[in-house]
Length: 111
Image (cartoon, rainbow, N blue to C red):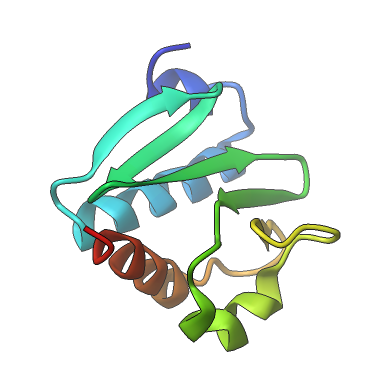
């Protein structure tokens, strides 16, 4: 698996759409984003930081979330169970585009 399209092709249409929406947020927020597949999942390089996204049956995970203490009040709503560095966006809920944008900008500012 070497690209985003190949990765999302394995998921149902509804999940593919959610993954594409998140990909678009990255592209719109940080036009110089570098996409790749690392560790078997989509990776987005913003500045010197990498953010990873993975789809699961019930949610989409976004990793890693360390170093964002100033956003903790918003991140807490999506913290994965028994994890401190992952956010889980349940498929049953709308994606938090504003929060994802803030995360991208915060990670990108750590040049």
